[in-house]
Amino acid sequence: MQPTRVPVLPALANRTVARTALLASADRNFRQRLSEILTGLRWRVREAEGGAEAWKEVETTIPEAVIVDSWLPDLDHGEFLKSFRLSFPNVDLLVANGTAQQDGPRCPHRQELLYALRRSQETDTAAWKSAPSFALPEQIPIQGSGDSGRTTLPFPTQPPKIPAARVESAAEPGQSSDVSSTRVQAVPKMTLSAGQAERLPELVGDAPCMLEVSRRIRLVAARRTPVLIEGPTGSGKELVAQALHRLSLRSRKPFVAINCAAIPEALLEAELFGHTRGAFTGAVQSRVGRIEAADGGTLFLDEIGEMPLALQAKLLRFVESGELQRIGDNETVKVDLRIVAASHRPLAQQAQTGAFRSDLYYRLAVFLIRTPALSSHLEDLSLLIAHFFERMGRSAPLKRIDSTAKAKLSAHAWPGNVRELEHVLERAAILAGDAPVVTSQEIDFGDVVN
Image (cartoon, rainbow, N blue to C red; front, side):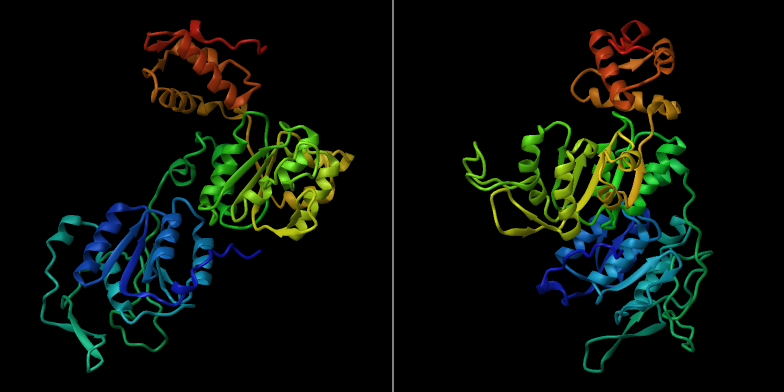
């Protein structure tokens, strides 16, 4: 399935701003070094800390060139590049990991970009700052806009030796080995721990099962693929859905959530599909349904396993055609959205027994993410405790927990998972009163049997 294409304003589709570059990297030092060099070469530079911010910047004003780091903290790198090339085919796209995009245009000033990338990779920052200025005798011809069609910019006669660089040019075979055709060795990616490299901010925990959830979110977020989230109650399924929306190309559009188990069956159809005035008793005015309200964005169907079979058939038709019909209306409405569904029940088993429509299941479960029970990653208990106490500390005095309380929490079975932990800690903080430390005496599991 092709990645989602971000819509481009027609007025901007073919209008790029000359000598303007956008740097997309989570490495602030890298952005700063590269920006200073390009500014010295008379470039206007804009910066973005991740892929989503880069999309926002490009939609506002399309630059002549975009330099993307080898790793993005929020979007899948490969999908970002494919979608960017589809949406902005006239922008020179450079990847700062040892490869350059050869399937797109090359701006007239690409050699300056390549030179700046090489310069920015000096490992000794002090040596880089003390390097000779740009005003040195040797000059390299650069395509310009003057009468002669060419101009020159001064470059150092001997560029500093760099042990490794982040870019290689897309030089054609047979080109001379000048700045624009030099092939330099790629540096390996920065070494990060698994948690630093993969964990998403919405998900607290460095256990392998939690990192796998983050990995799956990153892989599928930029696509249109429907996602089914399965996991026990209280394990953070809605947080996963929100992360999928945040990292998707639909992040600027609505995220609409509906709990299929919390709305009576008689009203659920009207909530999802909307209705016209007078369609049924009590419909005093027309109303847009949740599906239509999510147009362009993400629709999160929580506890979809509780949806009545008759309504599943109507939802299936929408999933297949992308069109819905409000209750009491003869006209159909075209809606473009991404569906993320969640259930604490094993829908595959329900589909086999007939409790859930199998045809709908296979259309929703194109990509499956499972949220683990807290009992399967108790090694994250300390991180979760610190996270919840820090969040409570924004509106009340900050608490901490002693070893006896932590031992009591570690011995609990946690049938309510992370949500239960949050409530137990909130209850303990209240019971502790003005005391800064929560002890085992304040740990109360309520009516839950261990």
